[in-house]
Length: 94
Image 1 (cartoon, rainbow, N blue to C red):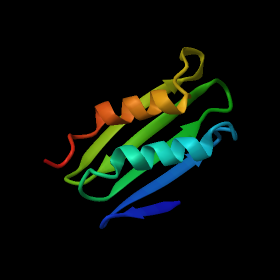
Image 2: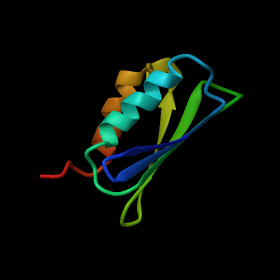
Image 3: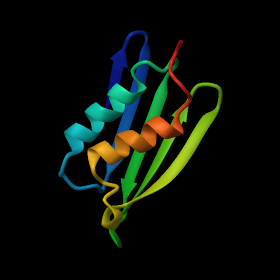
Image 4: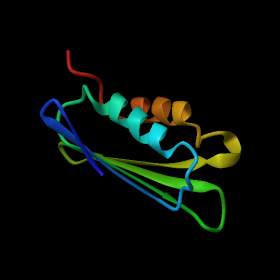
């Protein structure tokens, strides 16, 4: 899924994460990245063996970050994901 907002694009990929809250997770990530310049790609892949999701964020100027979201720690919650993404990406435009 690719979301365009104000001249920039947010591309989302979510696999093996189940159905709970996926639309909200996508909307919240779009909101967090909406005022960041450039194109962003977020990939979230769940494990079939445990409750961990591997989230990777790619952005302009070779930006790349990854984080393991632990379901048992409540990190699959859309608001927690928003907080993590906001901390991981560079600051907003002035």
